[in-house]
Length: 194
View 1 (cartoon, rainbow, N blue to C red):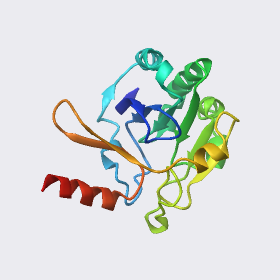
View 2: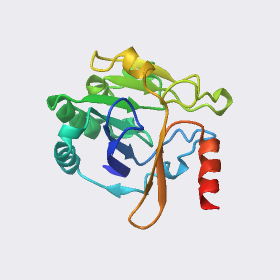
View 3: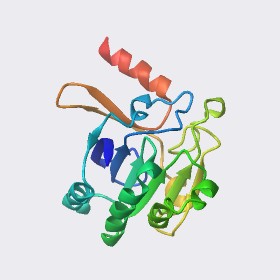
């Protein structure tokens, strides 16, 4: 499968410390998306499910769960379902983001394996006209939290606060992840550069 990046330990993509996988490729191409580099199915890099499971096991004591983002995770539903199943076998929860709506995913047999292994589905495209950072983890008011198991509760999400993490890569590139007001983050980064 193709991924854009993996962060083995982050506190900015859901409750607790999480192992996060950003898959590469998205057909939604939402207006105002701040991750347009994830749209192309040709970018990113190939990695095996086996390698990802190995990496999860290497940090299993430090994480509460895994988060699938994108790109569009349901483009890799079969592979991610296997990874999520391993996470569940290690007593970890699974959050999956998608630009599709839940009702549409239910109509696809290809999506069923990942839906069955997802504890919290966050659905809906980012809608620039509905920009709203008042809720955790989402950028527009149309996006929904659909609890598919009791491994993650409404209170887990309500108590979570949006945040960003900034890292400097081995090549010296500044990278960030998380959710919140991107414009404010950009202004802060520019101030740091002066």
